[in-house]
Image (cartoon, rainbow over all chains, first blue to last red; front, side, top):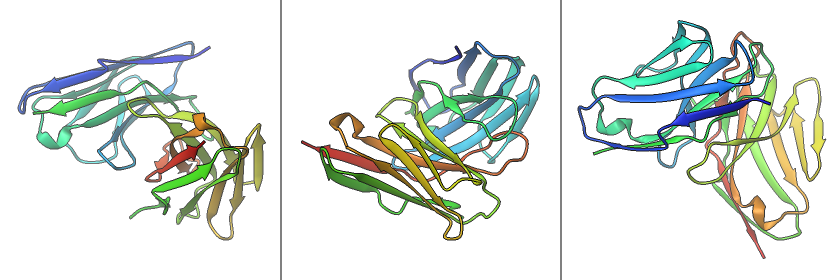
Length: 113
Length: 113
């Protein structure tokens, strides 16, 4: 069966510090990978998605970037965090074709102080 | 532009009764719809989905109805149980390449004993 893990689960970072959230998927190959964010009291917003190694699409302009160095690894980064980057970040995967369910990881709470 | 809307931020239902959660969408290109359940500080869990070629899909206590002409879908939970208390998100996607879901704002369901 397929599993998805992301870490760290909780992070408190000062403004201006870097960020790295990591996500890995097991039990499948060539998945689509996603980073979503849920800001306080809001829905889930798609930040990035990837259909293959090194292929990243950004959905919204922001202070964050994503990379996919390996088939089942997806990393969310920032060089300098802003207060507005605080939120609940979710990694997700789906099979590599349309019309399929997206499955989410456990989520990472980021608080920028 | 909110393409997927859940107009009820909260819903309270008595245990054993039916819970009905509603969702409206505006993009006629959407052809795959999903419902997710989310507990605090956890990733969303997939519940049930429906393709636009159907108008109903049932899985145990959960049934999703799709009315394409009204651009409306609903999730019925019957009978409702205390463990169903959570935030429910509806999501939609248009079949093009990566499975990019657009989420509603969520409805907080509370099941009262």
